[in-house]
Length: 405
Ligand code: SAH
Image (cartoon, rainbow, N blue to C red; front, top):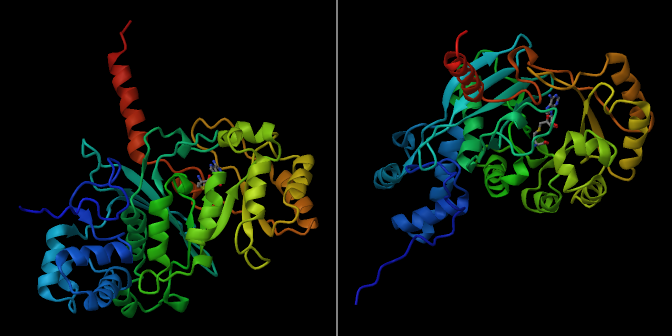
């Protein structure tokens, strides 16, 4: 009798059609997943932990792009890994640098799905005096259709794999020159040796709809031998997927941001349609019990300022009332317009009057200076150019097909 070893059941985040096609990327495997690969390759148990650490350091501390560079990983293991995995970076389709130093990358993902399509996502780097924030995407497009958000008009949606989420960071490090070799030859290295000090999951997509991959990616990002960024410097922003909020706190342990934008269900239903499913009271209850909250660890509430929609003094007062008892800071975001957007940004005086009310109630309420507007990199403006191109192509095709008089 012969027995076959079934390795198809090994624990692994599901490889669905929305995952990249084979060969898989080695980037994005958690320590446990990598250890399982080593079991398959036949690496003895006593070596596994050390090998995982070595590989992690090469991938995430040194940023190697080829297996040959992993000099302390034995040749047979390196070659076996190379047979099974790729270290390919996401492809940079376009890099734009704003007059304010903000950088935006349009990145092409590896082929995925039965048709081997290559989707695109955007990542944005925002340098400030005391920090450098990288804003990354968790999905291609978004299913939420918030009426003021450009990404929500993009119909194409798939989850990013953990490797694709981390891939955005690796590209940013490549381009900013943050790897040790690059820093060593940099005459003006940044303070503390880092350009990227903070990460926000505020790009395209709803991170809590891609929970497993976001969780795996953040595990690697916060790992000391991974990208070693403290979980307190990672902020996950959600439109309010209430049932996943406690899990985000317990299992991912990052800082939380809530895209609130409205203070009554009537208004919020219009702006964030997800509110119909998870209304404000439920959302606030989930925030109140978010683990680890304190004055030093507050929830950020994002509030986009829309003229005559959500920007009155009464709105500001209701907002203060809603937040009672929650360690919170409020981020007022001037609305960033996009072609065809149905709203206008509130006047500056209105925004200041709103901020004043919130401030007097004891909440920090910085008004977020729009960054990178000239390159459409500001909040809610992200929408991959592939999608824009498609719309343009469609129009050209329609014009061509239109009957001439
Ligand atoms: N889906 C998540 C992650 C996206 S974060 C979430 O909703 O939180 C993107 C942030 O930018 C959100 O707070 C979103 O509400 C905000 N935003 C979207 N469109 C905007 C626009 N046009 N102007 C200003 N902020 C916008």
